[in-house]
Length: 311
Image (tube, rainbow, N blue to C red; front, top):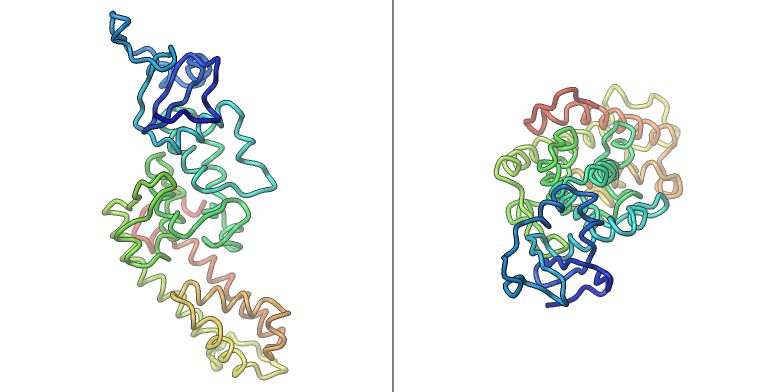
């Protein structure tokens, strides 16, 4: 049995064991904040004192949580959420996931509300955030691509179907092997999508990839009626070369699209390629309209029904 170095409190009066890790904490502190903890601590004990499991003179309670998750929750309860959720630094998704999972289990409403609010920033729960990030790297949470699977499952557990389309959209950017076999959580548990969500993502992948590919064809089409009428540099060849040298090398149409648009929209990268400002502004503008349409149609593209969409 390993005693947790940070959460083995010498004046604690109860020991909680998760996996093989023991946390010595205060019964009253936890029971005051959670009815579930309170009920857990009042389970009838054997009448014979010698039969009561103890560690260092404290009664023991076993839980099915991982030590990783319980450690993060106990730190939040003792030290406050500010140790994790500062405004000037991103939080690790593994911490956010642990807090959401256990705040739901132990009915800690405030922690669940605050942590899901932070996760919503990653999922771009509003059109403005969607245009800016669309499931990519963001300044709010340190989020790996595979974390989308765990995020989607947490939203299912917490009944937040309003955020689910964005999470499943991020899952659609994963390769088929990752979707089928899942990913490892920070505590080592394998996280997999339920069959219904997996089927939803596999079906949507083709539709979404087709949308991204069609966008690129549109902005590279020299005969498209939306092309800027005045192009001082005759950018057609330069745009096609930029697509071949940067966007086309990526592993999926979603990533190809973003690399291409980001390059065109960055003057320091765009100008040496011989692409004029009017053409660049046109492509960025068309991409904004593309994202707005994708956002409004996201549930239907995923085969879902979400009331009051878009939010």
